[in-house]
Image (tube, rainbow, N blue to C red; front, side):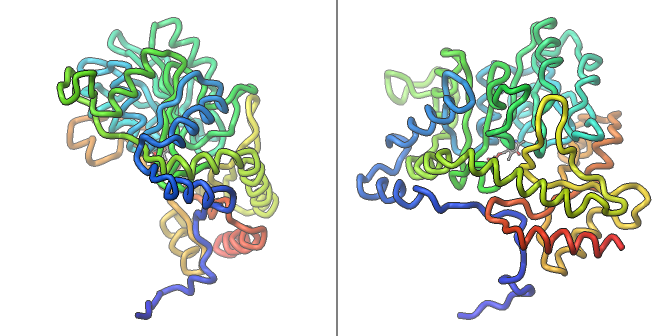
Length: 379
Ligand SMILES: *Cc1c(COP(=O)(O)O)cnc(C)c1O
């Protein structure tokens, strides 16, 4: 059977392609040879320990994806009805969804126009008598300025959830992302720094929180099997997924170096592009890791992100739009949430921002071609 493709796929540069050339095949073969394919297999614990060790946490709890990790984090911290959780409006829906599904109320803040992370200066004003937690989400390559948030949390007795899905391997003032606050979460989707196909992890230093996450991940089974005191989920990660993750983790340092090299190449090629805001190369507390290479079209450019992405696609360049802000999500507005919210920076990022091919398999040639096409469409 022949397939007809609208594009010549050999020339199309995909927005993401992972690198699977290490021990992945060997460890997968081990799963098959030993018959260990469920969550009971030994790679799961190896991945949990390896990742926890890497980000300086005591406990890791592997789960089926990064969104599930956020659900576990919110419920493990017992956030629920009447509780408010502050988070950035510019993020993936998984963050707000976890809060809402637990019965709590998301309260969002706008982004910093340069780092695109939550504007930490807006957090204090959002704290009310009902605020119970802050969800810190590192976006695209630079970590959130965490210290002021930790100080606020301490002062007001708030919990911190750190969504480090995009930034395993990054540091903030030399301390690993994934190690801040009460609970951190990771994703191992194929566009993340390390992948298990689908997968995620909850990380904490608190043994009872870790225990709670393990129980919630596994339907809240108890000693007397099939009798339950609480409702959990089946969020388990399989040994097959974890086998991939263990092989990927072995190569994390190389992956991070490759991401940085990709980002630096793009910046070098695009630094004089008219009308284009590029990612910051660094802040006072971190060098950009360029999980993805995002660009924002400045106001005077006639194209918006949708039009630019369409033109790039016709030239064989894959892209993705930036996040759409939580306060503009129809599903939340219909529930009466965020009715009076206005967050102009995030609204602009959503309409003017997109990211270029940024995967680990990207070659120097492909970066050059992508940048050249960007320059051409801006002419
Ligand atoms: C990818 C991502 C998630 C969700 O992870 P999945 O594994 O795709 O469910 C959550 N938060 C952020 C910031 C992400 O980038």
